[in-house]
Image (cartoon, rainbow, N blue to C red; front, top):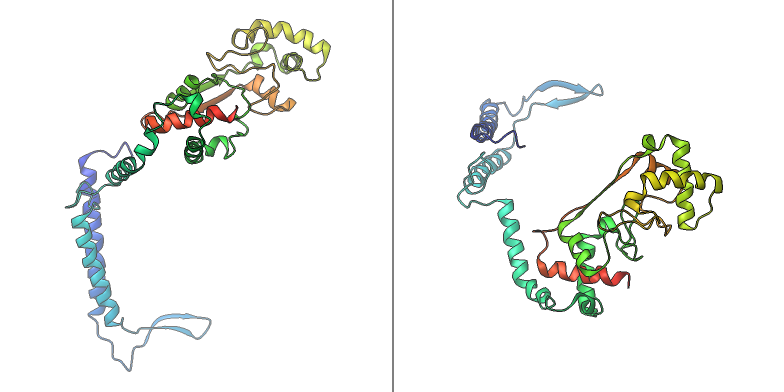
Length: 299
């Protein structure tokens, strides 16, 4: 809708709205001005199933006046509330304004209940039953859509219970993840490694790092490729780098699936993930409670 910002569009919408309403009235009274004899209404000429005829009965007067009342109500509504293009109506109501009002009312009601925990340390707060209960409600409202109601995650969305962290699991790192969000990107390495067979070699070396069953010959060949092209992010021991969100490959925990096909795809085609920022959306008290709740999940 960013292309429809010119003032003329508001006038266009207002004119179309008013003309449509007036046209309905003209149509209604135009057809009702013709008098049809009660005993000889005739038909409209429409017949279905051989003998089902549409009769030309006049509209009931009560229905017509009800329609007129509806139109009058429409004009009153358009005078009071937005509906005529850029005209905001006498009350100046907007959905954004109503949302802000509801948010302010909720903050005034529930803010003190949340803010009382702000001065408490996250690690201490994680063991507070009341704070955890409130944190869980916030989690179910804002986080469960991606991480699951049990915080166990799903393919592409990390579990918050296993103490395996891409960007760190200390209180400050968790808070930054919530407030600032995170962007993760694994570049496609298939062509750089030399093709599917080389990707499979690297995969078997990663299996060796994670303690899974592996092909020794392939793992030996894959190590050279890994050291040359993967260790810069995942480190030579494969334990990852939290500073850039490079995952630990030596713990056999896989964000995008642990099957051979899924791991081959991750190496060959790369992956991209995003954790949205909640800055400006969640106030400091809610962030503090959520941080404590998430911190306590893995402990």
